[in-house]
Amino acid sequence: MTRPDKPDEPLLFDLPLDTAAERRRTPVTAERKRPTAPSPVSTAAAAPEQEEEAEPPESGKPAVENAGGGTGTGNRIAAGAADLLVHAAVAVVLLVGTRMLGVRPSLEDWPALAVFLLAFSFLYMVVPLAFWGHTLGMAWAGLAARNRDGEPLTFDQTARRWLGGVLTLGLLGLPLLLTGARRSLTDVISGSATYPGRG
Image 1 (tube, rainbow, N blue to C red):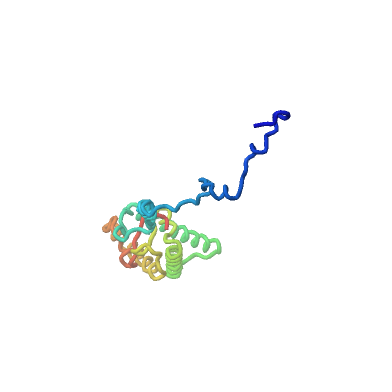
Image 2 (image 1 turned 45 degrees about the vertical axis):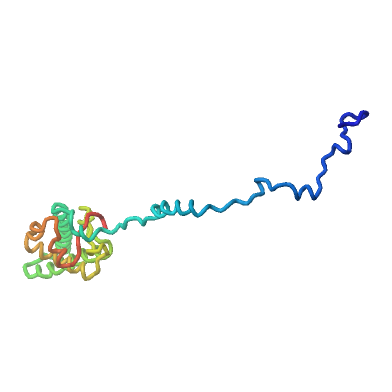
């Protein structure tokens, strides 16, 4: 209702009255309501899904049952041939170096040269196997040596692997040909296994 002389001005009793009593009687709106906690039924229903998602990932370690399997004779022969090539290159450098120094090795000097090559071979096999799990030849052929449980080799095991390699070479590779994809003489002597991979 408006006044006749001022049509746009509302009368006093047309103004809204907001008293404290009316505010108390006003119901709580949806905005003032607190969020309700999830029901126990919905929480229990979501629990199995969370347990399925929380399954631990598979371990990257090779299985014990497959230790030494799947590597193949061809990969082992390729790794051994590559390591022998490294030894032969060192022997050639040694002989060329003695010739450049004006020394011609005689028959009596060959035992000393053989001891030097054996010492080089020991360090060449033991240090990389202990630290990285493979030699240069094994890395090139895609092989790695580990314990039966997948752990890195100890220095004792790497030394025994070197001894097994010397015995295999002395027997003209026959143990390697006989074992095939199974554990080789080197693996048996050292208590280790050869896996596909690069350490």
